[in-house]
Image (cartoon, rainbow over all chains, first blue to last red; front, side, top):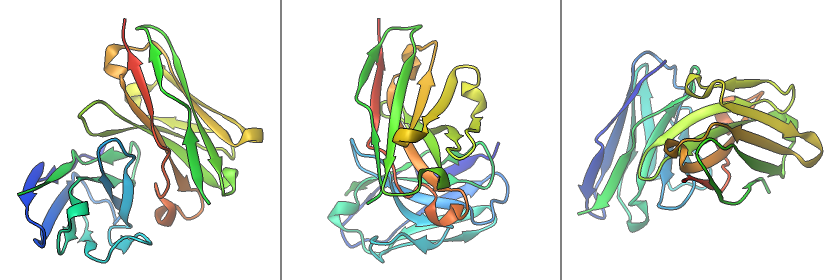
Length: 107
Length: 122
């Protein structure tokens, strides 16, 4: 199984800050990675697919990058509605595996 | 518009089974896999398996092998996930999500169901 190590597990930031979340895969996953945002009581929402493609309707302050085993999600200017938990998910091989999640909180 | 609508919350006793439905609309049912993901209270997301509505084939996470069964009703475009021998640790919100069979990356988990809370308690 491919292990996804996501960091940090939580972070505190202010509105307007830039934040970066990282997912490291235990083996190469060839950009078969998506990023999701989840708010309490809601289903996850896809932000990024294929490592760097922005989901339609998602603000351009969200971006994804990476290759091989290391991938990042960057929020360039944090907005109040961005405070949530973020997950990566690899679909290069089964079983699909999620990162442990990163909770972004207001400083 | 694309929708995945799940059945309502369930309360079950340990040892019982639960069957959660995921009704698809707004797209060609047979062209997308349906995946199941669960989330225990305060915990992360866990992939359980997938169902191919086109051929009826399945792929289950090893953790759930022997306890999970995924089926479909083609006439109502509904996929079912049944989990048996329930334990308290199975208390979670269960989600369905779709993934395109032909172009998987672009449609990977682009739409999710609203979630179904399953509570296992004596």
